[in-house]
Each structure stands twice: as C-alpha cells, then as structure tokens.
Amino acid sequence: MSDADLALSIVIPAHDEATRLAAGYARLAPVLEHLGLERVEVVIVDDGSTDATAEVAARVYGSLPHHRVVALPENRGKGAALRLGLRVARGPLVVTADADMAIDPRHIPEVMAALARADLAPGSRTDDGRIAYDSPLRTVAGAAFSRLVHHYVRAPLRDTQCGFKGYRLGAGRLLALLGHVEGFAIDVEFFHLARLLGLSIEPVPVTWCDVPGSSVHPGRVALDVLTDVRGLARTRYVNPAVATSRDVALDDVAEASSRTRLTGLVVARGDHDALVVLGRDDAVGGAGVAAALGGELRTTTPRELTGRSLEAVRAPQRT
Image (cartoon, rainbow, N blue to C red; front, side):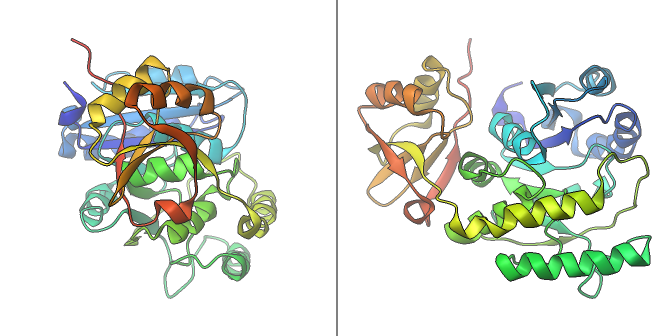
C-alpha cells in the first residue's frame, strides 16, 4: 500500500506505559476495524522509557498492517515526542492520543469530519466551561489552572491539555517544526502558534474516563506547564527555509530532502513563491535541498507563513 491509500495516522506518545498499552489498544481496536485497518497508520513514540514500552508497543500493535515504533534515546518530554510523531506521520490527517486511550476513541471519526473544515480539531472535555474530574479538589485546581493559562495565552478553548487532538498533516507538521516546548506545555504552545499562523480550529466535544496507573503527577505538570507558558510570548520562532518556485513539485522536494536525509518538512505555498520549512537543526541539509531545487536557503517566521497553503513532504516511494 502507498501513502496515498492512508486516511489517518494515530500518534501515541508513550513514556513508561508498558502496563497500559494493551488496555489502550483494546479500546482503540473496534475503531480501527470500523475505519479499515489498511487505511490507518499507528505511530507509537517511546519517549526514553525505562520500562519495556517499546517492546510491548511492538507486540501489542504489531498485527496492524501499518504501525511504527520510534524512540527518543532519552526522556525529553511529551512535546518532543509529539513533534517527532507529527514529523514521521504519513496520513493526510493525524490524531494524537494518550497510550491509555482515556478519551473514547469512538470520537476519532468526528475529529476526522471536523478536519474537513478546519486545520486543527482539538478534543474538549469541558462541561459548562470546566472539566469535571473524579476529585472535586482536582476539578477546582483544574479550573484555576485554565484561568492562569488563558492569562498568558489566548487559547480558543478552555481544555488546552486534552491529549486527544486532530491535525491536517501539513498544519500539524508545521507546528512540530516551529515548536520549542519539550514538556506538557506543548499543547498550549501549539494553540499559541496556531493563532500566530492564522490556522482554523474547530473543537470537538469528547468523553473520557480517568484511567488509573498514570505516572504523571498533576501538580508537578501544572507547575512545569505554567513556567513554560509564561515564556511563550517572548519566544522567537525562526526556522531555516528554502525559498523556491511557487509551483515546485512536491515529489521534487521529497527527493531532494531524501538525498540530504531530512524528514518531516513542509512546503508552504504563497502567491509568489514556496517556502520549504525545515527544522531548526536542518540548515546544513537545507543547503543541499536549496541546491537541488535551485532555491535560496534563508530563514522564515510565523508571520511570513500566515495564509499560505501547507503540504507535508513525504518520503518518495521507491520501486
């Protein structure tokens, strides 16, 4: 099967999730059957786990026709794992989900439908403007946390931290290329960047259950998120890019990036040119892409990328 036959990639960041992957797959499996196993790719990103997460993921998801387990050599955080997953995903639409599938996976078709109308389709667990956790204290703390987040970043919905989100591949890739945050504040940073880029957002109401066994400490996460969020407004988003012809063929970009061993790039087409957006560490390889395309290696920012059509660059199909 070629990438053209895929309808969806599901990206699952996982750190020390060996004991919860099987139960998560059991919740997801009926939805995969409904969508068609041949049309869905599952990407599990092992974020430097100290347990057998990678081995269990390969075993649990190994029967699927399209699955990948990619690993970070050390624990870097949810943000790093999500960005890697978005850069290697191949489906035209991407849904990110937690390993335990605490958000009901039956919402995936609803997210896909929303992505026909919007660049991003984040899941929202809010009820009357707040998330109702099992613990009343956690519910109150969560509401206070949301108010603090919105004090620093004007996100379009209250539930910024829901791990269940949908992206058109081009938009999700661009957020991954531009993003800086390594930890749990990645969700807020993506909303911040989406606003800077003028991306369209359609939230999708979702249901969830508080699955036990998480290694995440809510209080510590909240402090880390708020620390990162306070710095977002001061972050300079500058990436290397190759300026080339507006009509550059996506296959030619894919071939040039493959030769220079660059992956997960985005072509942003404007009225007069196209920008091949690279990762912040891709400038050396970008020189080779520029030479192959007859373009110019320079830098770009979200302001310049606003309003452009976004296409993800995929590895060329070999015969």
